Length: 426
Image 1 (cartoon, one colour):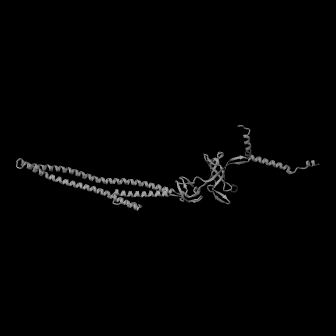
Image 2 (tube, rainbow, N blue to C red):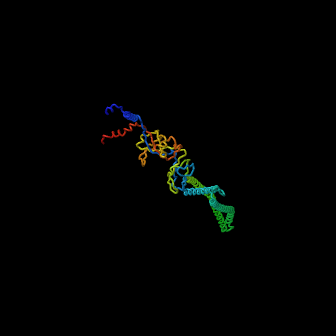
Image 3 (tube, rainbow, N blue to C red):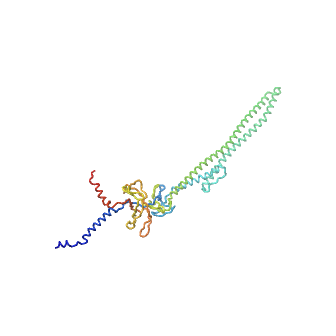
C-alpha cells in the first residue's frame, strides 16, 4: 500500500541534510557573534590645515586697496608684494618730514658756523639749493647785525676814551697852572700887606685861584665819570658778544633737538610706508584669500590671507561632538577619508590623534564641539597610479578607533536598553 511504501522508502539526502546545514550555520553564527569583534569608531568632520606655521597676513592699518597682486593658491617667494595699498598720505607725511629734517640740519649748520665765528658756513651736501641760498642770506644778515652792533659799541667806547683823554689833558693843565696862580696870590698878598697894590687886584687874583681849583675838582669828577662810562661801554661790547653766542648756542641746541626728533619721525614714517607695502615674509602658497576687489577698504589687523610655507606638514583639524570626546585619547589610530577622493575607490589615509582641546567651542551647526588635531602618516594620496600631494582646505571624514565590541553585544544592545528602561515609573 502507499503508506507502507512511504514508510519503507529511504528519505532523500536533502531532506535530512538541510536541517543539519541550518543548524551548523546557526551554530557558526552564534559562535561568531560571541567570539567576533567590531571596531568602535567615533566619526568627525575635519579639514586639512598646515601644522602651526601658517602666516596670517593682516592689514597694518585702515587702508584702501589699490591692487591685489596674488590669487588663491598662487606660489609666492619671500619679498614678493602681495597687496598694493593707496599710500598717498603716508608718502606725503614722509616727504614732509624729510623736508623739515633737511631744513633743520641746514639751520643747525648755519648756527654752528655762526657760533664758531666762521665767515661762511658749509651746508649739507644733499641740501636744497634754494634753502641754502635763504640760509646763506640769514647767515650774512646775522653776521652783519652783530658786527654792526659791536662796531657801534666800540665807537661809543672810543668816544668815551677820547673824552676821558681830553679831561685828563684839562686836569694836567690845571694842575700845572694852579701852583703859579698860588704863587701870584701869595706875592700879591704881601704887596697888599705893604699897601703897595690895591686890595681889589688881590681879590681878583684870589678869585681866579678859587675858580681854577673848582675847575680841577670838576674835571677830576668828569674824568671818573668818563672812565666809568668807558668801562661800561667795554663791558657792553663783551656782553653783546656773549649774548649773541648764548642766543646762537640756545638756537643750535633747539634746532639739533628738533632735527633728532624729526630723524626719528622720518624713520617711523619710512617704516610705516614699508609696512604698507605688504610682502610675503617667506616662500609659500596663498591660502584663504579674503580680498577680491580693488578699491575696497580694509580695517587695521584684518586678516587678508594666509601664507602656507613651502614644505609645511598638513594635519586634520576635526570637530568632535561633546558626547563622543570622552572616548578619545591621544595616540588612538585614525582613518581619514578625503571627500575629494572616493573612499570606496581610493581608500583612506592612516593617522593618529595628536591633541585634544581642553575647552569646547560652539559650532553654529553642530553645537558644542571639541577641536581634535590628527597627524597624517603621509602627505600624498595614491590616485590612479600616481601620488597626489595633499593641499590645505581639503575636507575629510575622520574615523577614530576607540575600541572594540563583541557582535552579540551589539545585537543585544537594543534589547538590553529596552529591558533596562521598561517597567519603571517616574
